[in-house]
Image 1 (cartoon, chains in turn orange, brown, green, purple):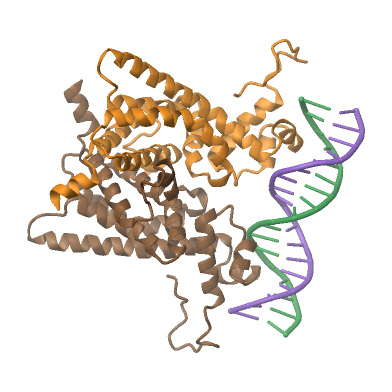
Image 2 (cartoon, protein in one colour; image 1 turned 90 degrees about the horizontal axis):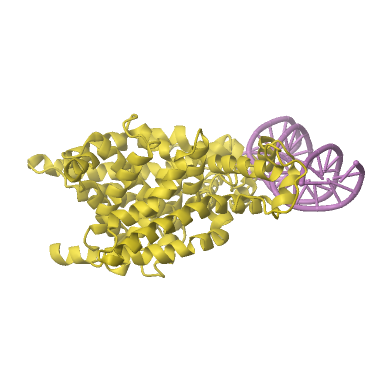
Length: 234
Length: 234
DNA sequence: GTCTATAGACTGATAGAC
DNA sequence: GTCTATCAGTCTATAGAC
């Protein structure tokens, strides 16, 4: 998704050029959209960071929104591919009998997203923030991003259902919604937990974050349905 | 916080005026900042919605940011006051013996925020969204809002600790962070759960939302520490 | 493919009349 | 307190040279 779609037989003017304009724009956009969001990022800030000019954005991506969508898809698509690969692995293993455990499914879902944060230097931080931000970037995202998530929804939804046969559909959907909220707000706002805990919690530690997240969310998932609980306690 | 600070002995030019300019600005700002966010809301859209002019914003609030901060504090302050009142109630009751239960504390914390959604017409929707948005509106908020939350942090933090003596501080802070993520993402993005559940989950039903949220989060809170669990299972 | 130059509209803020 | 008029700057997008 990030590669230029130049056919392989095309001879570049300078095959060893450090990076071409299109690539530099995508990288600058990843950084700026990630840390500032769509509305707060101006094309001027973006093109000067990419050391090019306004016209290049329009030439390569059609518009600011076109660039944004391509950046988002470039970040989301590999994450979703890895999620599906991990789920495949879990489910093929379970053909012999036991189906995937809740914890395993959650790790397959959260892990690839959190792993964005492991990229070198500050780039990982920005990517993670961009990934978390997607859920909260209203209009600019919705249509184009939805389709990138379709396959993930279609595969993980049923997987959760099978792992949680006691839950009503309603209870499951609420919990899925909460789980997404936990993940996205953590990825979007990682320093907040560090702040309130006075440095005790380290959101840059992917393993720690993943462990804590899976523990919290899986406990929330296995809790009895609200209706069932009300039936018991009054 | 929303009242004009005119002393009671001041004679208004027209005491029965429907609402004065300052008030209309605050109400329009509540709506627009709530649904669009700070950056996407222009002062022009705002002043025309309030049926006044650009200069009025500067006269009454100094700047766009000044207006935003006053709106945020006007929404947050009463919510936090109600939270503290409910916690007082719980804790004074418990002087006779039992300290507040986790569920009760969570309801005292989530309830007043969710209750914003019960205001008539579409205003509640916007207020709820604004409240959820605060966590995700980077720069424009941080300093001024922090102080509004200080007392709530100082009171609820220890209350949670007392209700969850088994948790390490680290585990507790992560869970508080997750709980905020659940609440804010649900308030900011209420229609998403309705969408994925094909209408089965109804986020405009405050009671349903509160029940589901408390059930999920309280189960997450009582889960054993990550460290403790790792000590047992490997 | 890359650039300069600019169009055309919008931004927040302010001066100054009333 | 409220307004009009306007400033000085920003915004995205595009035309057209190379």
